[in-house]
Amino acid sequence: MADENTQEEQSTEAREKPVEEQLEQGQNTTEPVDTEGDDEKIDQEEKLPFPTAAVVRLMKANMDHEKMIKKDVKIEMNKWLGKMCAKVSKEMNKFPYVMMHRHEFEQAKRQFEDLDNFEKEKQRILAHFEAIKHDIKRLERDLGKAEEEHEIKLDKND
Image (cartoon, rainbow, N blue to C red; front, side, top):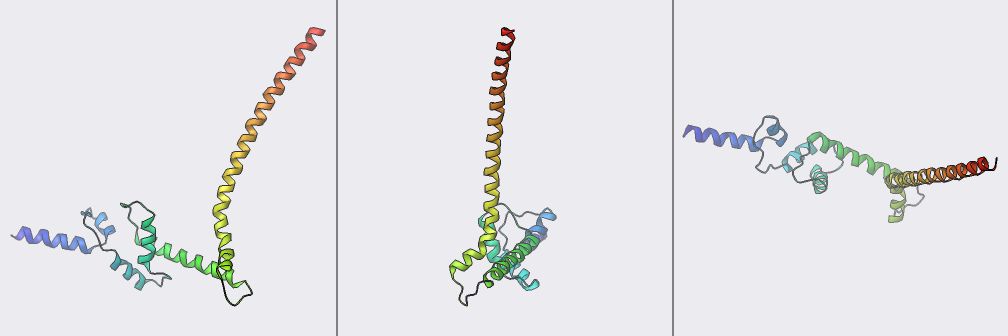
């Protein structure tokens, strides 16, 4: 009976610890862990621009189900999103208008989205360069053969 109480106490303790601590201590983490409470603690400890739970929900929606996110990653993602919001807002502030509309927002965020487009354009250009290199090699071979044939004809005429 004492063993049953000890096991029950251990499982209760395991549920109360964050997943990261359970993994470090080698405890079973198959039981669902409530991270919403942890997110609220993070919000209270740090002065973060957005609710951590909302940020984590967005992150997890784009990650595999079994992936876990450490506290420092949640905090840094939240801070980074806040910085991005501030940068876009500063760009919008450059417009002379009092009322900001979607068009101004689209223009302000364009430079940040252009970075993604830049990478795609870079890959397209590199692929085009490779095609040009292959064309040059083919032309060199073709010209080399034409020169060799021309040299052979000249040798026969001598």
